[in-house]
Amino acid sequence: MAISGISRIALVGNPNCGKTALFNQLTGSRQKVANYAGVTVERKEGRFTAPSGRAFKLLDLPGAYSLAATSPDEVVTRDICLGHFPGEELPDLIVCVADATNLRLHLRFVLEVKRLGRPMVLALNMMDAARKRGITIDREELQRQLGMDVIETVAIQHGGTKNLVAHIDQMQVGAPEPVAFESDDDLHTHVRKILAAAVTMPRATAVVDDAIDRWALHPVFGLMILAAVMFFIFQAVFSWAEPLMDGITQGVTFTGEWFASTLPDGLLRSLIVDGLFAGLGAVLVFLPQILILFLFILVLEESGYLPRAAFLLDRMMFKAGLTGRSFIPLLSSFACAIPGVMATRSIQDPRDRLTTILVAPLMTCSARLPVYTLLIAAFIPNTTVWNFFNLQGIVLFVLYLSGVTSALAVAWFIKRLRKDKSEHALLMELPSYRLPSPRNIAIGLWERAYIFLRRVTTIILSLTVLLWFLSTFPSPPDGATMPPIDYSLAGMLGRFIEPVFAPIGFNWQICIALIPGLAAREVAVAALGTVYAMSGSEDAVAAQLGPVIAAQWSLATALALLAWYVFAPQCLSTLAVIRRETNSWRVVAVSAGYLFGLAYLAAFLTYQIAKALT
Image (cartoon, rainbow, N blue to C red; front, side):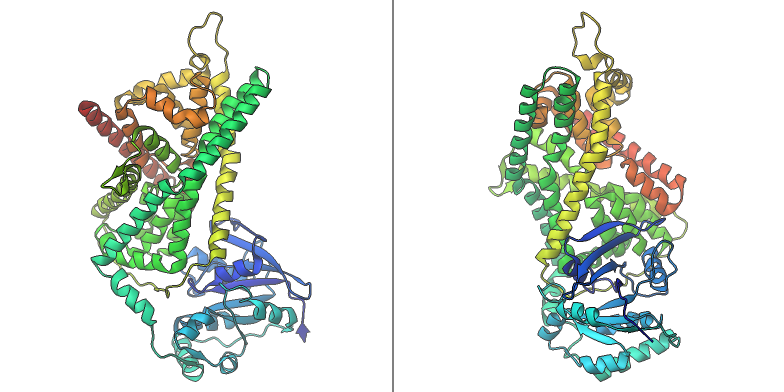
């Protein structure tokens, strides 16, 4: 009996098979990202329309090496394919994506999916790369050996999914039939038989890959290349973003001045000018720098370099009590600690995973970047060192390097404390090098810009309004001589906790900014903008906050605040994710406690030393 009603399709495949690129090519901007109910695994769903006018829902399932699940990602993929996942419909069709240049690895997973007995198509992806390497694949013979339709695709090329869409549009899928179970040994034997019958490979790896890897994976030159790449990134974050930041600053300043001149004096004008524009504007200006940082991370990921960096750093991380598998979660934490903590699910050893979760917040996330940029621009001269390097970029690089060094030191200390001293070898796939897809990069940047803007308009907006309220009420008494904020709830709270932070050089304005900064680190900049605006410093303080603090703070205070934010206790969202990933409040308390202690100690030493020297 034939069934033609295909409307819901699931994409499955090993990591690095081009599955997400295929998903982006099919759905474009018609996609949404969320989490599956009850777990922290990411859920991506999109839509596409075939030439016939039929609409399809496409679900991009997490990458998996096997359906004998060893991680939450693989559990989700297996359960959805079987129809066992709560709240998810059973897909009408499974499209299994395989890398045509690495069928030896990927066909094993294809056979595992086949034995589920679901309607299935194999998308033979990266066919252009396979042809360049001289790999010959007999598609008809591969179809006969697998017992399923095989469609060639090139996910990074325009029109590279045309044949797949046309095939799905015309498919008549049969009722599911049970498939005989194969043992692991049988699967390996079956894969070798298929490869011998349908695939001819002149060599196991590409000549270009081998030539690049001789340098990129060299124990000395490879580390030098990685250090140079990271240094270049941080130089670009400052240099490339400056014109865009100036444009945003001018736009925020002009709009704020227009509202200030249009609205009558009163609470509404104060809320909009001193609250929203002073707070949100101070954070929005850093969007270009955050996107430039994400741009480089996406390019490194798309090019296939990130797994090599993990392999390269494995020896160093091994000595610190981690493995190379920790590199990608830690690198993800440069964007945000939340996906970094979630990415630790790929680490199978519970001990190594817990250590990585504890040190992930030490990576310099993009939320720290507004704070770093504000302080560096205000206190570090914008000069050229050795006729080439930007001094501000060098300082930013040192701050990022401090976070990495601290993470390795903490991991080493945890290794000394734990009872289990056994170690685990690193086994991971190194994908072929490839040119990043501009389409995938653009979609990735848009997603991250949307996430940042959503934080600006939700969390930061809410906290800015709350801080404005605390800074405005109660009103100053008759005959008051100090700025109104000194008489407000925020002023009282800042003065109350100021003695705790006085030894590290923080004034009461900084103390106020630290409190909402616990919800999201970048809120600290918005909070400073609101506090100084309410203190009557200057109009349009969003654009003028740097000069204001440069005039009122000492260099020692600025350096202490930079040191504080290298270790600053993570935002509440990160703590919530740590609780959800570990199911332990004890881990949350340990994480927040040791980070607060390190932050206070680093700020204290920095302030006292800088004060003595200056």
